[in-house]
Image (cartoon, rainbow, N blue to C red; front, top):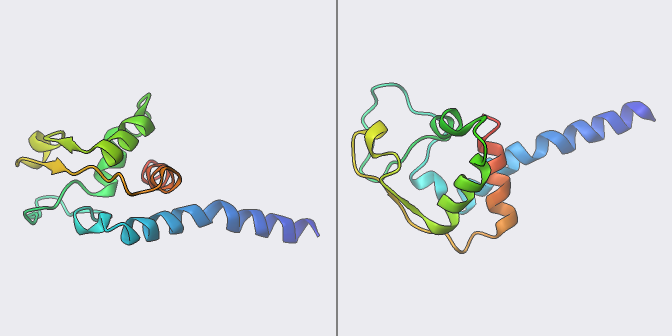
Length: 111
């Protein structure tokens, strides 16, 4: 019985990571954000930072989850311009429900 409960909990704990990548696809986040980008790769015109670059930048910073949620819900402009070597703008994604945006942010910060 305990073995079954442990397996069920393990599935529950790992599910959000998969669901969050799926959520990012569902909300078309992956039109501009990839999981990872090779160093020195030429980025497409609308391509923003990869999820792994975002995680590296924000992981362990106080208030990182709120900053990323604000970027999703309110948009951002030129936050990544210096690092990407080009102007950047993310449109506000007000249509993404808060719980889904939170799941995506939590997933990104685990990368």
